[in-house]
Image 1 (cartoon, one colour):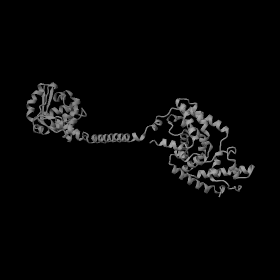
Image 2 (tube, helix red, strand yellow):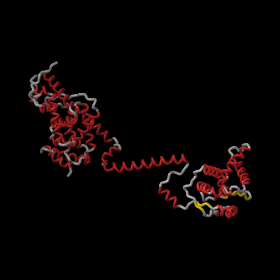
Image 3 (cartoon, one colour):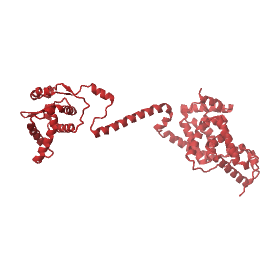
Image 4 (cartoon, helix red, strand yellow):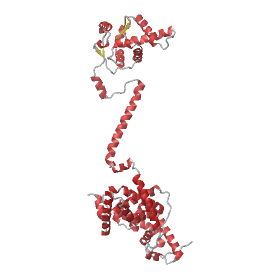
Amino acid sequence: MPINEPNSKVTLEQLLRLKRAERPNPEFWAHFERELHQKQLTALVQKRRWWHGMSLIPMRRVLLPTGAVAIATLTFISVRQSVSPQAVETGRVPALSSSTVQEIETLSPVQVPSKAVYASLGAQVDSNATPSNYVIPVTESIPVTQEIESPSARSIAANLARLEQSEPDLIHSVLGSRLSSAARVQTVAASQNASEETAGTDSSSRYRLIARYADRALSPEPLAPVGVRERIARRLGDDLGEGISRIGVVGSRVSLKF
Amino acid sequence: MNLTKVFTKTAISTPERQQEADADLVVVKKVQAGDVAAFDRLILKYRERVFGVIYNLTSNREDSSDLTQDTFIKAFQAINRFQGNCSFFTWLYKIAVNTTLGHLRKNKLRSFFSLEKISEDGADIQILEQLTDKRGADRDTYLKELQEKLNEALQKLSIPHRTVITLFEIDGLSHAEVAEVVGCSEGTVRSRLHYAKQFLQGELGKYLRA
């Protein structure tokens, strides 16, 4: 429906001033006041969250250092996590940084007695069974980086670990308590060359002895057939033969000399 | 030099405004000292103006009521941060405008009119008579249509333009005050005003003097 045509006598400014006349009635303000007081009380009672105070902190000043610290932390964590599974997978020690390698190089290397010392050492080991008296003479050194790389060395480590569990007294009397398992394994692995020369002697008595131990402790099935036990003993003997140069029996004790 | 101090000098343009700002500052100091009831005086003084600004920006009385309440609550919560660098009413307007702009941006797609009736007591009678010589029902119908057209045209403006024209033409703030409330330069305010007026003249041409 057409509305009355306006007189068109006003300016835009005057027309906009009409908006000032759009006012609520007094009842509206009574209601408004009630609601506002309720909201005010609620706001007073309501506990402000901790992040509301964050707006007061000049963020530009703390943003850069915070970001840098966060990135550094993330990098550190991710590098650590990426190194660990790899080490588990390959069975190696985690990759060493250059500083760590330097530290290791400055440490005294694991010492391996030479072949000539074994003979003089045999009696000593047998007679001085107490580990505290046992001293391995320092003659040759091997680099630490030659670690448990070969399968045979790993097998030796496993066998020694099992022996350690089943015959702790034997291992204790032979190796003493000063070297850790890993160091012992390194020593065994490093003395492969020396042992090869002496491996040929007393092979039959060695196999018998090892077969006895295999029968007692290392066989997965104590009542396994004789053939199986002998095969296990032979394999164990082969593994041990790489690292063990001498096996001696004194009374009820068995001594292994490296 | 502190920029807000410059704004204070330029924003409070008239001696009356300066006097008003000083009086407000006294009340604000009381509130800051712990006299919470003193804040009610500020509410009573400014509630209609704050409501007016918000209403002219939203064209919705219910939203305006809620937003006005929110504005006063925000001001009450932040009163300790008010340091007197600008006048209290400018500071309060800033809160009101920012609260409203946030609401408008959030509800871009949902906007409908809920208009207050034009109070002939408060309106410029001369303008009304110039607009129409009708009486009774015809006059009311005409005024209602005019009000709707006016609000429609204002809502067609972008939010920055609507804010500027509302503060300057309807609420009577100076260019400097508008610039301070909106947070832009006076030049920008003038430019926006010019554009907004051009647009409104195009929209409301048939009601205006040729």
